[in-house]
Image (tube, rainbow, N blue to C red):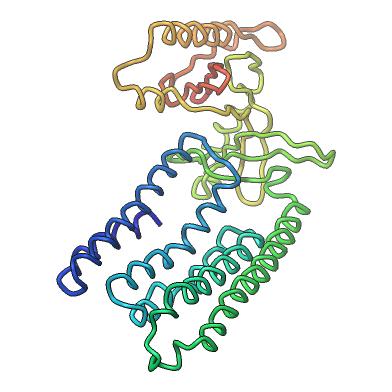
Length: 340
């Protein structure tokens, strides 16, 4: 919406010679304010700020924008032009688009706001200025029909949203009733390499509880590579022996359909590489010392690990670099034990 408003502001200025500079300037200013609002809102949302009422503010602004433009058109071009201008013509479409938010209440609200504003703008602004010889399409009877249609566009959108939500819930229920990748429900992909990809997943066994995990899945192209799968299985077996607070724990290994997977502890945070990318000037000394201390603790544990009979496993991490060092939201440092 912000991008569309900004482009529309530029278009208004470009059309200045055709529609007149007073109208063009007023429209450009109004659209620029809407674009600025959306820009501020996007930045706020990216910082984690959100309130439920923001949706209502956005819907109200979107539905009311044609009304503001209507007032500008009346001021500079007259009521006939304003009542037939594109912004009011597409008002029903704007109401229908409110359904993209998936809320029946918002759809009904959008239709109600649009109908009420249209009726008020016509009755209080346009009708007193209309010439008695105005076209019949601009008379109260047909305008009232438009108002009713705007309201029912909100009702129909709400009915559609309700049906769509029910279908989505039924589809999700059907998916949940089956094993998805065994007992794991895959969500978004959080990483990928040349031979495997990693997903955020939910472990959901028959008992009913759920646990967030990271699921590493072999790409289909390598699922038939016996040598690679043997190494992948060996990696899982070795890593499963490691139980340390600074090492990402391996929870499960198995095969589903035509590929293999490795389930690991899910670390809610970011990698050291991403943190360094955000702070190109470097991290504070205290943070560096903390990360180094935790990593050394993990490596010392790995190097000293033995098998069940006390024989040293002689594990060496051969891929110690920032992408494999994870930092959780509470400040934990976790080492991904890959390539050992």
